[in-house]
Length: 137
Image 1: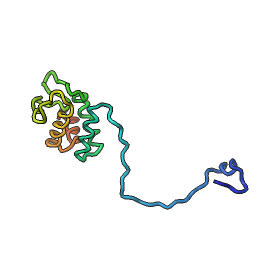
Image 2 (image 1 turned 120 degrees about the vertical axis):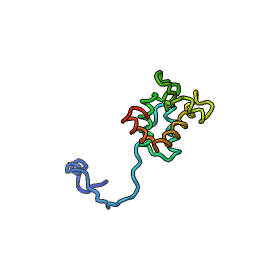
Image 3 (image 1 turned 90 degrees about the vertical axis):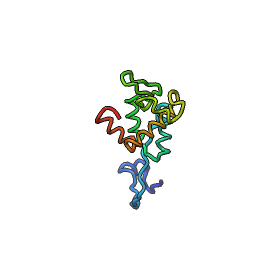
Image 4 (image 1 turned 45 degrees about the vertical axis):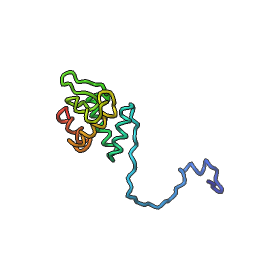
């Protein structure tokens, strides 16, 4: 940027030059910043959330829910109830319909858990809302 007859310091002493632009509107919404999930199981779940055309808000609800239920541990067992896995299925054997490897495969548990949430609550935020009210889903 050149200023005729002024030094650079003189030109900037009064502030940077003002550039006028035209305003416009758009119907597109800005994308939310997406933090990458920190664990392998969360990454698997995020992929399934995207496949279901749920937005990142739904993933955040799912993350809150399953962090509290199992800490995303696919071998988590509730000693008092017997609930098992990432989604804390009760009874644990419910997940067998999702695959024979349900006891050891986080992806099988995640698929089952998301199908359960969709059938019972519609979306993860529905399940999370229920959990916050009742401390279970």
